[in-house]
Image: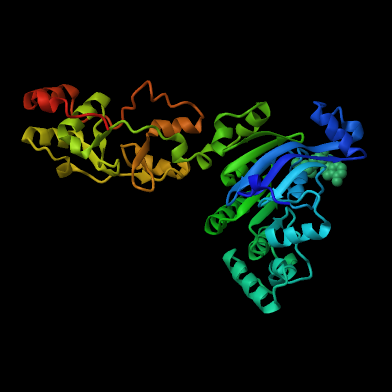
Length: 437
Ligand SMILES: Nc1ncnc2c1ncn2[C@@H]1O[C@H](COP(=O)(O)OP(=O)(O)O)[C@@H](O)[C@H]1O
Ligand SMILES: [Mg+2]
């Protein structure tokens, strides 16, 4: 059965329920009518209650919650390993609730690979044949699947281990085999249930980074389950937070960090390493010390005087960032009667893209007095990250920069001198030309 409304999504879950126990349908009926999880306990354990969400093609969708909140039950419903009591689950628009076991096996084989917490490797098969397993199930011939598995093992850093048995590998290496197996199968969707939870923190971080790298390269759709909000925040494009079977919040890491829906979510949020979650785009401020190159040195000088800063960004007519100018250079140009900012243009000290993690901005912020410039793919200046904003974002404090101007870098030329120079050199007509870009 095809559902056109959900075809654009890798996965689409509509009002899905899972109740374990003697009378699951009765439990669902009562839950629909407003009964609580505890009230339906006599009919069964409501592990997933009224879950609805869509997973976009190519995103990492994280399901996070405490142990027992229903995460594993939910992920097993997505590939039909666990039955859905009620509701709809579509995979690229195909309804899987109600499919036969044979059909579900085919969906799993062709469309979804799973990576488990405890690796689930075959102990008596070589690392190579473990990595090739998904391809074997798909009916790919021995030579081809070994070739493909071998290149994936190399990709995950296990070259040279092909003939070993899983037991000879550390936990982290075994999970690399699990990743290689999932990626080698080349399914569009990867389901990962606490895949890194059994690993030591350092190894775990390496694996998270590897996963993000592979995902960016291959554009797979990944549903990743974790009870660790740091991991959720690092990996997730979006995060669904589960509690007692229900999705209690669904949003981007930034939504969840800055606006937790309830105390349960807020508790998780307290321990988050914000520097590894927030990006330049999340914390940037509108650029204020900006002039268009065409506006000329007088306008630049006036802008810097008004904002009490020694430097400002210069943009082209299309808002492309051209560089920076300093107050003392502009003062000189104005005194010389020059109208061209370009004569004193300097390169912008630090430029980042909006998806740069703020952890990587600290060094830049220390090296330069100017706020870090954030530019889009067309090199347009879309924001700035002053140091104060960077620090405030770590503590989740508002950087009160809309009320209090950020004085950085401090002016080299006193404003009285700028005003005097502008008056002495200016005429009524040029005095109105300058405007903030
Ligand atoms: N096979 C099962 N039979 C009965 N209850 C189950 C079964 N599997 C899970 N549950 C119950 O469903 C709830 C959710 O479990 P689970 O999905 O494993 O949570 P999580 O993965 O978030 O730790 C728990 O209360 C658990 O005891
Ligand atoms: Mg679980």
